[in-house]
Image 1: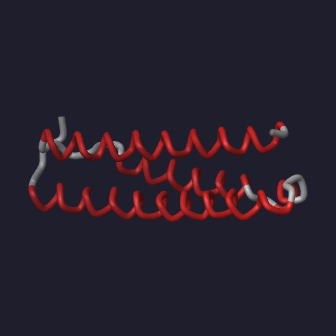
Image 2 (image 1 turned 90 degrees about the horizontal axis):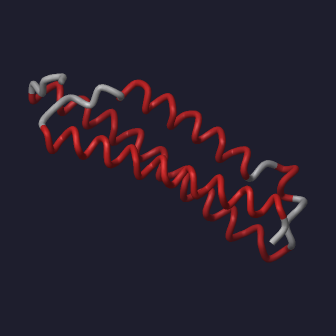
Length: 106
């Protein structure tokens, strides 16, 4: 595996870990019936994550892949972008539900 491919896969893994961490934090806040205080910060981080994903598959990187390797990587990046978008929507919706339910902050 060439170095840029390894770096891109590591970036995708790191992004996946951030998504899992976000979902865990939101889930824990619901379980404890407390407001998720990091909502705005999390939404900003998710926007940054989407930008990072765009860079993973930038045109300069595409040239370094062999013919059959581009489609799987592009598919992975596209799916991660979709997941990041849905997690962002979830964070917003959970925040609104917590407000309606009157969850307390710590």
